Image (cartoon, rainbow, N blue to C red):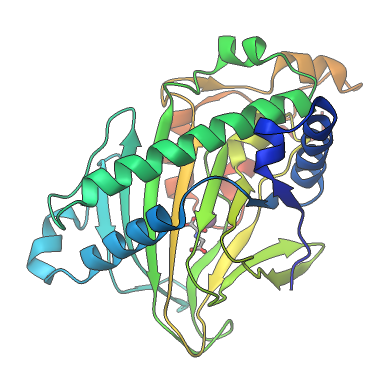
Length: 311
Ligand code: OGA
Ligand code: NI
C-alpha cells in the first residue's frame, strides 16, 4: 500500500494562522516528495458524491444508441465517451468506459440521464472551489504571491473537466489494466471514489503501490502543468489503474487548469530562486500541451518532451 499524506482541508480554510501554515507546509512537502495527497474534511457532501457517481452509472447504463453520438470524438469535443477495450500495439489490453465533459467555464452535458447536468454543475463548482483553495496554498508553499501567478495564468476562469471512469473486474495488473501508466495533464486533479474497491496505483521510488482510499476522502494529484510552473519542484504523479479481481470499480476525476490559450511557463520567481537560474521546461500553450499529450499518452512522455535537458 502507498504511504500518503492526509491533509485536513477544514484547517486550511477555518484553522488558526498556525494551523494553516502547518497545512501549507504539509501540502508543499507532499507535492514535492510524492505528487499526491489525501484530502479529508473537504466539505463535499456525501449525498453529492453519491449523486455524481450514480449519475455516471446511469449514463453508462443507457442503451448504446443513446451514448453513440458522444463516441469517437476528437480531443477538444466538450463531451467524449468511450467504451470497452483498447488494445495497444504491443498487445496490451486496457478496459474502461469513460465519459469526459467540460464543466467550466461552460458546462457541457449529455441530455440524458435526467438531472445529470445539474449534478455535474454542482459537483464541478464544489471541487473547483477546493482546487482554487489548494492552489492558493500551493503558491504560498512556493513563496509566491497569488497575484504573480494570476498575471501569468488565468486559473479562476480556467478550464475544468469532469471524467467518470467505469472499470470492469478483471484478472489483475499483469493481464489487464483499466488505464496505463500516465500523469494527468492539468495543474491539479481530484479523484473521488465511493466504496473500498481498490485499483489505483501510484509509482514511487521504483515501485507501484496501491492506494487505499480513506472513506469519504478525495485524492489530489499534482499534474504536469504544476510540475512545469513550479520549475520541477513539484512532481506530477505517475499512476495507473489495475483491474480489481472481484469487483467493478468507478471513479470520478476532475482536473483544473488555466485558460487553454494561456502559455504555461516555469514561474520566473522560481527560476530565479532555484540557484541554477535556469528554466527546466520550455514554455508551451496549455492547448498545445494537451495535443502533445494526446500523441504521447503514456508515462510522462509529453512532459519529457518539453523538459529542457542538461541546462
Ligand atoms: C484518470 C485516472 C484514476 C482512477 O482518469 O486520469 O487516473 O482511479 N483515473 O480511475
Ligand atoms: Ni489519471
